[in-house]
Length: 513
Image 1 (cartoon, rainbow, N blue to C red):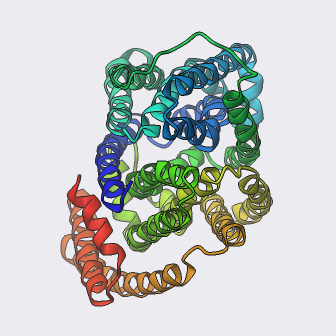
Image 2: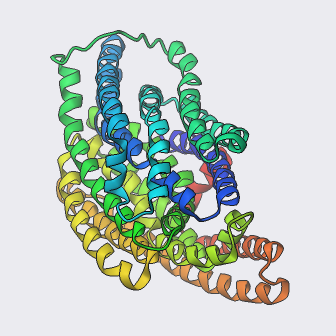
């Protein structure tokens, strides 16, 4: 894929991601309005722990590290029928394992929930157990949509999977709202399961058009299947390690006042907006290009694609990070503060968002950096480095939760993310020798200067408009819009003045939305 093609793909994914994220905020706003920041929302969020664990372990790891690179290799070598055979075998294996895990988790759900939130009230544990049992069907359905996405992405087809993500969130909103009067927050859990089904079904026609033929095969001896397994196992191990901090922060949050876990996760959802819209879009679009460049031994294309992706992510996420820190309170007010979610809840969520915003850049870079190693078919390096990051994260969470409560948990996650990003960059440079470091550092310095000046202007503007329009909902909305618009215009002006090369690529992505 050329730079133009990557921009087009990233723009398409970004457009769907933007719509999906907007709907996601509507979903979160509905949940916070219906149920506030309470034991109910804590239980709902805790209910995702086990289903997300299963999906991340068996699907996300296999997709990102093994399935797409191996499949892309077969497709680049014009061996599509063999690619379909390998894809079917891997899908069947993963679905079978998910079914076994789901049955066990349905039986032992109360005991599992007790491990995640041991200090939570009994009513929170009971509700979380019920929600977990509903959501356990989600990973099986999402695995089907995930592997469908992997097949289509390997062929550089991004539209249907992107639309599927929109259908997923829309289903949660519709069914959750309709069922809420009858079964409360469990209606949103049912919407999640039905959304996962819709996400898969919308991709089926595209699979047929590209000639994919499903086979009921479980050939563990096929070289392609064995290669996927060999590449995926380290990442599965890595994701397993990554669940340890989840258990730790949920344990720590369960000892804080009711609703603390909800505050943490509401802030996390806001942090994920720029990551999901842009960083994920660029990372997903550039990944097939990286794997293809390796397969065809085009190292310069590999380095150029990696450098462009990383610099573009920094260009968009650093100023957003600064702006989000400054405008944290009006942002939370506009999105969440209605219904049972009060101003007090907003103030409790602000520290977590500020500290999470500090970590947007490294979280965004982490979308691209591990994929770069996966394209090199090196899955062990990210695992080893994630183990180091894990130790840093756990220590920091236990230290910072005491003085900063849920804000300390967010800060610990952000700091450990910075450590992970720096370790990955150092390891990549050591592995391939040249990563276009001078241009990356030059771009970073320009972006930091521009973001700092922009932040100063946004801060002054915010406090001026705050005096003029007040802090009610309308005032918060005006403060947020004015601050965002002023910040964007100032940064774009500085990008032109400082001759930031990434501006051209980002404008291409925006034009293709």
